[in-house]
Image (cartoon, rainbow, N blue to C red; front, top):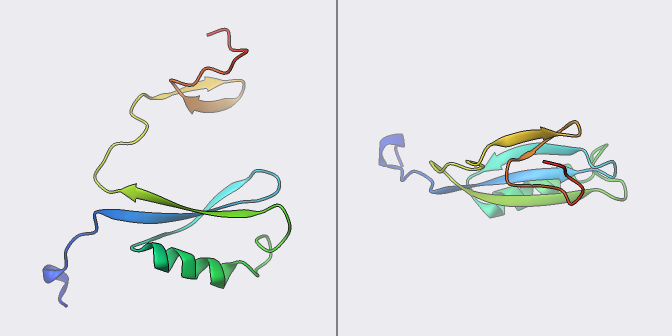
Length: 91
């Protein structure tokens, strides 16, 4: 199929990994969930991805859509969604 005849993707699949320290890494963006799942199989035995406490996540995102439109606020050294107010927040 030529490039001009392809239908644009309405969604993409982001593959994330969170390690035991809570560090999140975006590993790739895929056209299908199946491709993202296949990537886990290629990656999961590599250093930094194979130890205990790590977790993979596939997140579906619609393209051409605004996300996190409320904005962000800096609180206690972290950027958090503007709508989020921790229980002990004075703001």
